[in-house]
Image (tube, rainbow, N blue to C red; front, side, top):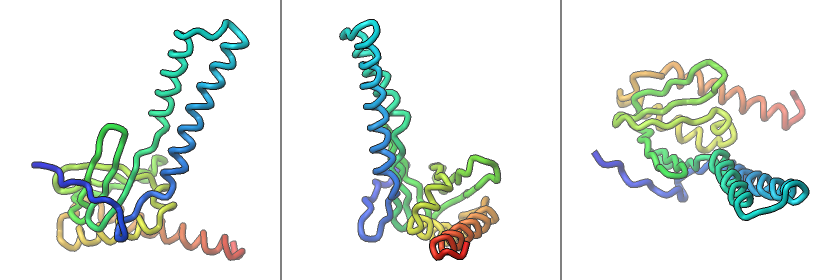
Length: 176
């Protein structure tokens, strides 16, 4: 079975608002590490091509580790773009939505085709429009009967998002 092509996030799509700042921070950290390593080499043993290439490789690995996945959501499909892969989860055909009550805070979405994606709770909290679309799609999955595992988790997640939104409103209005 072929994956449907990812739909670009447009007027009816939602993208992670934190991706650009986090990607920029990953680039800055990688470059800072590279420059700091070269400065230490310049003061200490001396800069050579081999050492510069080694520090460059380490800085590139650091950048790859820190670079976040790019997440976009259109009605019915969540697209997660990693460095080398793109996963499309049909959010209106979810089969499981577990949200463990441990410290990880990651929601695992699985559609009827078996495609999985993990979303951090902080990502959902920082992107209310993404959360609202995901919730609507998950409720559609429940209504259609495809969501067989995680209905209680969906309700718990919705309550938690509502609590976070209320706290945010109280904090911004000075009532907190």
